[in-house]
Image (cartoon, rainbow, N blue to C red; front, side):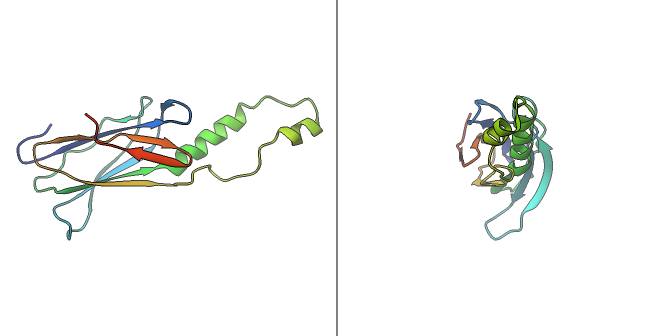
Length: 142
């Protein structure tokens, strides 16, 4: 909860390539008290089944900048692994070779996403991440 001397942050992730929340994405929250100060990691969390981090810590008084780090590579790796597990079995070897996807890594062009923004005491900042394997977008939500 915000007070006049602190700001608060929340986030969620929507995987726009499948139109669903991105669950189990590791997220860390860091803050600093000025542009020349060092980042201090305040806590780590992971998105729930609804793509939300519900337990990010409060920001300390004097925070001027915040950074959210999203570890997207593991999410895309687990998603591509579960998709390959759900592929139907082919009738014969020739069909299997023809239907097999080209080898690739985790499918994440951006293995991590770091969002840095300025905060004002007393304000709440909801910062959604719209994510797909080859791009992302963020905005200040409500």
